[in-house]
Length: 146
Image (tube, rainbow, N blue to C red; front, side, top):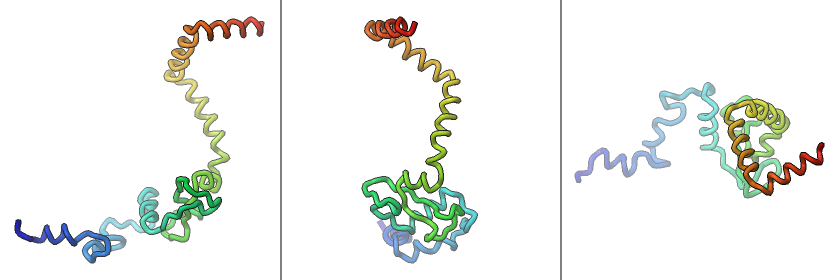
């Protein structure tokens, strides 16, 4: 196979550290949005440049999954405005840990009104009632309540 431009690019062109790979990145890219970027793209950009440590910056726990957390809540491209936190510390810092019980309660109020929930409960009740031991315990409990 003759060596052409394709072979050259394939072997050298877009490897890290090569000049060809840097031509169309960052602000040189025609689709660069600067600070008007979406949250997903911004997180990808920060993850590319901010080294992930082995421990949570806040509680120093190791061997856990770390989240990339924004410190100022203004979501800038500044690397000093980001930190790696464990999920627990991240939720506490964002204030989501306090909201979680309320959100779960609202979810359960909504979910219990759905057909899916009623069908699941109907099936499980039928299965319990078919079991003679469990049926006997239910009947005994009803007698004691009365």
